[in-house]
Image (cartoon, rainbow over all chains, first blue to last red; front, side):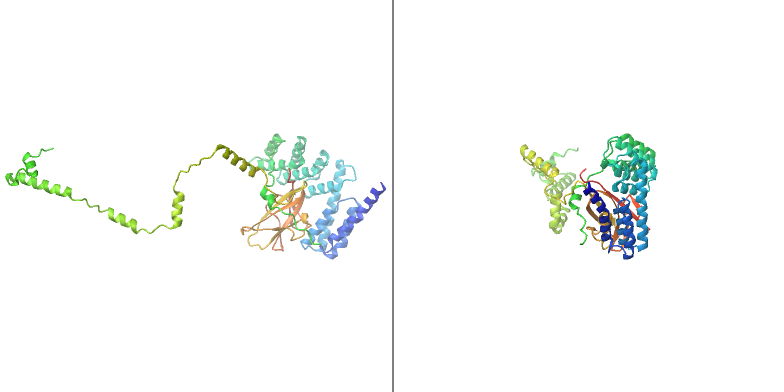
Length: 219
Length: 202
């Protein structure tokens, strides 16, 4: 028990330390102290730090000014807090896991209304949530009513569709739109067909043969 | 049909002298002799010679043309195959088609998938894809324009998950992926594309 407590107490400072090391040289020097402070706040609140570091690295790569990078990271921290609060409101026991917070923050960033996200969180156990959120967000991006989209994805899980197949549901609905159906008709058709929706094609042998891993970052 | 006077036959057969005939019959004999002479003469074939000469004068077709003509000419080919060999051939074809041969491409883990990035950038010297999968580090994933047709591609093994990314053209121009269906504001005034990498082993 003491060991676990010690490790937990060490994990926060270590994360903050490694974050600083990752940011130095990749973002304007003037931004590092403020970014470091934001990362430490996230650690103190039990929030994931990776989305903050990624946002800072993105700003640095895009040669954005220091104040804008700090503002964007601050905004990301706000989104993570909102995501954590939403999870607790939906019934998750605190402390919520960083993975869940990241998933919900993603869904909110993709413009899914908070009540819809809350409903999905409340309706689904943890494992399929991330895939479900992406599927609902995809449907919303195709201008499906987010509430109806959430209903469809929850129904798909209820009909035994595994999480890896949830994106096939949104793809099937989008396909029905392309075939000339209205949004309501497309949702109804896919719901009727559940759990039999066409599976997306697996990567072909030639694609696998061509695939390569990203080059390792310089030491 | 008018019957020929028997005396004319006799004159033609040399049994009677032409002078023994009347003037009219003698003319008939003369016409018949002329007609026979015409029939006996060889028939001239005025059109044959030019045709033959034209064929002789025609240039010899090139080797490629002759080959093409040979290829285009229908021929019958007969195979004599024992049924057992045709079954063996079918088995080999099925094996080559269905069973992967050797080790192709990288090993793909259970929690990894393949992302394909495609962008149309005619005239570009270099295109890279940069995103949260490579810490926004420009230069680590280069796209290639193998056909020199302005279509740049990269096929990358990534851990499963959702990522934001952009293309960097010629090392300085940041461009979202217009083919991506998912876009999100990057909080810096532009839009990032989103790719969701699903497990390759589904």
